[in-house]
Structure formats: structure tokens, C-alpha cells
Amino acid sequence: MAQNAREADRRSRFDPYTAIRWNDRRLCDSALTHSTAANENGCQSNERFEFLGDSVLDLLCAEWLMRSNPNWDPGTLSEHRMRRVCRENIARQARSIGLDRWIRLGRGAELQGLRQSEKVLGDALEALIGAAYQDGGGSRTKWGLIRAGRMAAWAGLLL
Image 1 (cartoon, rainbow, N blue to C red):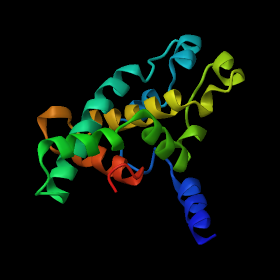
Image 2 (image 1 turned 90 degrees about the vertical axis):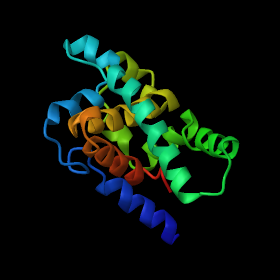
Image 3 (image 1 turned 45 degrees about the vertical axis):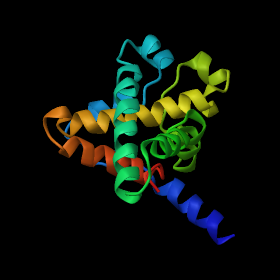
Image 4 (image 1 turned 30 degrees about the horizontal axis):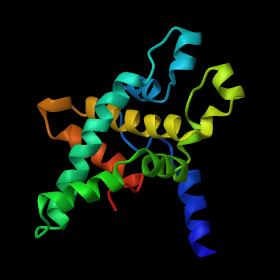
């Protein structure tokens, strides 16, 4: 029961706008905007940030696994990274922090119940990590990775 209470508290406290100090909050807006909402509102969707976040998450997970397990061979490291950075796990983590409450969907997608789909949830979390990376300085500095890493750790992907 205590575990469920902690999860509920974690879910209610998560706010993507405050979990990271954004230099440009519009990046967070875009990361949370599904293509159906972008099409309806004439704004940018989260697809480009999802592309970036997927790679950033792979890198963060690989680095974390190497540091945490110095005796593992590359095959074992790859196997564990694939288990952590898979659609099902990313969607589960997005759901556990209540990210579904923040995703902007188009009316049709909302009516179809896509808010709870693994693809939409996973893409939104990857997009948020990609946006955090971009906002933190991108590839020019390690600050972007630190910010994205905080987001990934907050989501439970690096535990």
C-alpha cells in the first residue's frame, strides 16, 4: 500500500514545466504536442524532439550502464540497454509520472483514446527528453545531457 501511495504522490507532483528549469518553455510545449494537435492548431509537433530524445536516451542509458557495471561485456550492456529503452518500458514510466495528463492531442485522437497508447506515451517522454537536451545547450555542452538525464532519472528510466 505504501508503494501505491508513493507512486500516486510522484504522479501528482510531476510537472514537466517545473521538473526542469527551461530556458525556452516553448520547447516543452512542442515536446508535449502530438501531431494530431499540431495539425489542428498549426503548431510544431513533438516528432522531431522524439527523434532526438530516442538517441539521447540511448546514450544516457549506455553511459549509466557502463558506469554502474564496469565488468559487463558489450553484449550484456546492449541487452540491458535494450530492455530499459523499449517502447513498453518508456510508456510505463511516462504513465507512472502522469505524463499522459500533459500531452496535447487532437480531438479525434482524444476520442480514440490514444492518450493511453504506448506509442503516444513513449513518444511524448522521448520528446520531453529531447527537448530538455536541446534546451540545455544541445551537443555543444554537456549541460543538455545533464538536464535530459535528470528527466530520464525522474521518470525512472535510469534506476
